Length: 414
Image (cartoon, rainbow, N blue to C red; front, side, top):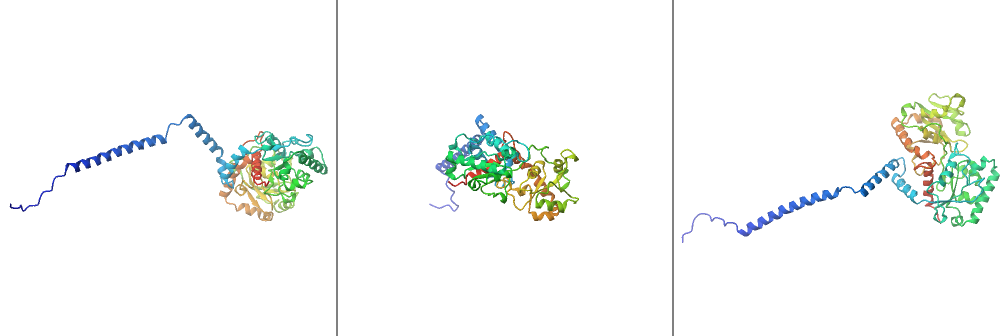
């Protein structure tokens, strides 16, 4: 048979091949539809309608976040650590107050809650009405020795008699209760703002060396031990005028100081700067006859308030400056500033050595405007930490002192 000279035509596709291609197409369409449906369901389940319980939790979390917003600022050394530890302190910290003692001498609220030693009185009152107090000594983290040397001083008790009273009282606690002997007093603390109160405790060496001393005189002169003791802020209460706020436009005076020349640095400060036209420095207190609250009103119009140490390193002028919105200028070779392990003081104050007094004006003038504004903003933020309240309020001076005690109770060695 003769063969054709043209190319052979391809065979038509088989029916099985057509069936396979159709099945794959159908499977692909089905997969696409399934994936689309699953995606819509996922979106639906990721955004459910909140139940009342979920809504309440969201609101609670937002409230907590708002409460802690200010404490996440870099004005704190470790903002997040402070926030978490503060919450743990509020929940767990317990203090036992010894009930014994002559009520005419101690354990009562000190004689007044006013003046530059008011911090002592406020602490005595706050601790008794706070959630930190426990009636069960076995549940206590720390033990409070309620000695009010300030009250003794108000009754005219001599320094020698104070020392005897304190020693006899503490020795009585040691012999009657087992708690002191477990740590030789390392989990005990007392609070005093007046330097006389610090001296009155020196008759018992274990009280000075082992116990936590919460004092307004954090200087080497009284044997202050920074990692053990706590600097109590000296706050003149009540404040005569409202707190200073966002009022930088009114602060036209570069620097201000007025007070007694009861220390070497104050004498030098007055001698060098009392006639200056930009630093308002007086070598004595402002006479009240010149007008009502002239001293306090000066803080409102000043950028930097100079805070030199007096007969002791501490001064209520620092917390006055904070309250009135005037940047405190710490002029001291040594001062374990209150809450120094929590707050970064260089973010809201100017810390200088005493030798800087001779260049004081130039140092202050060299601070850029933007840095001054940042210092002022931070100062307003931390004002709440230097205010006593009754009853106490979250983050106020009482709670900050309790937080310092909370930190120290963790390092007590048994």
